[in-house]
Image 1 (cartoon, rainbow over the protein chains, first blue to last red):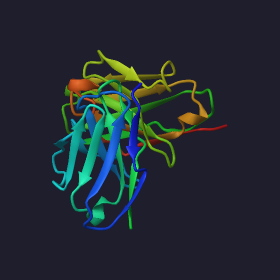
Image 2: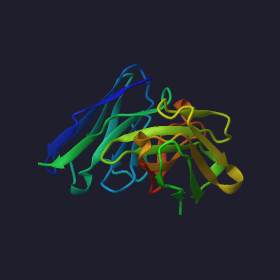
Image 3: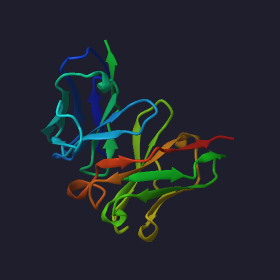
Length: 106
Length: 125
């Protein structure tokens, strides 16, 4: 099975900061990677699919990059609504989520 | 409005069974793969199972293989998860999720663009 490792597990940042979250796959997954945002008590929300495709309605401050085994989610200017937990998920071979990155207020 | 509504959760004893349902509306159900994803209290997301648009391709996480069965009824716009031999570690909020494509992984799909609100399953004596 493919393992997904996210880093950091927790990130403290301020409004306006540029934030980067990394996701590493235990083997190549091509570009079959998605990113989700989850807020407490809510279902996850799809942000990015196929590593870099922005889901409809998602603000352009979110972007994804990478291929193979290394991927990043970048928030160009952190907004108050962005404090949440973020998950990566591979769908190259079966499906696996990363452990999550909690973005907290600094 | 595109919507997924789960039902069937509850408190069940270890070793017993439970069947979850997910009612879909607002989109052409039989065009898309569907999934179950769970989240234990305070923990991360875990994919449980996925099924292609026509039930021709099905997958399970190793943790539930042989105990859980996913199915769908396209005529009823419904997704199901039959859970047998339940264990304490199956305790979680179970989400139904719509795939972006007709197949449940790879070039045919595997990302989830619509989620339900979840149904809680608690396995305890």
